[in-house]
Length: 474
Image (cartoon, rainbow, N blue to C red):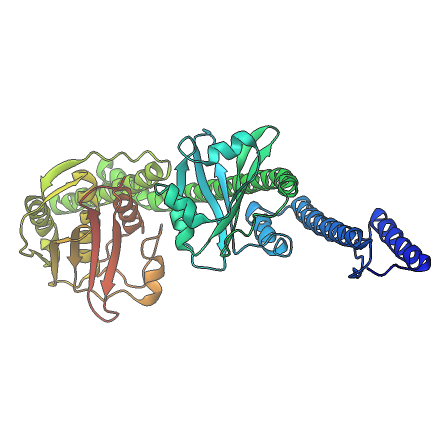
């Protein structure tokens, strides 16, 4: 081997000392070209490796500082995890990152968030018992776990569902970081790569530091997310209180307006009947008494509707379920409405259908059908036909009421089942309507877990229907 001159040796030492001074000053962009026959070549290589390691750690700290700054700016947990996925790519090699939380009971691990450049098979919501999982060992040691060959690991532990799903995604190695905050386990951060043994030569202490800092950051983000969710819930509750208060004010306005007229009429009739100086024929007295009945019925109907809506809004609607024959039930309703529709010349027809046993609150279902049939009679021309039918559908029992009225316009559809809805169509017999019947019907059907709607031609006829589930979903 050729001997170097003292000058050349001194120059090398000077270059190495300058590189060390740069590292001490925090400047890690050190450029050294290792000579092939230089006796200090190992030192050149060691300083270059140290510079790269320190530069990597600096990048890691910069990423963590960026994420910490984001937390202070009020980012939510999902936002932080997105930043981890984007910012750590030049620090830790991966194709997939998963984040799992330990539930409050400390017994279950649940996949909270995951992102990958490959199709996912282990997705959000996947749960596993901590006691039966190898993750328990990771928590007990407090150290990151590296699996260099996931396929080999799966062969040894074929019952590991999570590993099987990740392997199915194409992942071949993984790094699991335990997240512990103030001595309490929070969860896990999983880095996975499609390359085998990707993490076999990493320094575990680096990931210990990353895991420690991320534990604090992610826990803060989780708390921020919880506070945000609580804030949204409070805002929803306040909005609901405002809505209910406005609804109550509307009720009072409706009651004041709609009850004043009938009460005034009844009082006027009472004055007429009690005035001895006013001579009334028997026919006039009968007519006045009949009017009292009509006005009283209207007031009672209004009060019952208002009470129903109030009861439903306050959550006090109680359903009493019974199993009954649908055919017998609808037959009774059709006969009763046929008598009520006689003065208008309207026919009530019950269509043929096979008998079925339905489980529901018969009183409330009757209320819905009464509303639909009364509306059909009210808005159909004299002498028309109202049809009532039922059928078994995949999700339950469908009951329908069809009329020969003017149909429902597109504009009316938007408000059809809302409180105090007023349709463009007018009752054909001058009947009164508060606009609560369909809204109450919707609430009753939904309380049963069902749905309600209408099929209508804009020019003629409508079919109102509702479905009561065969298996109730209260």
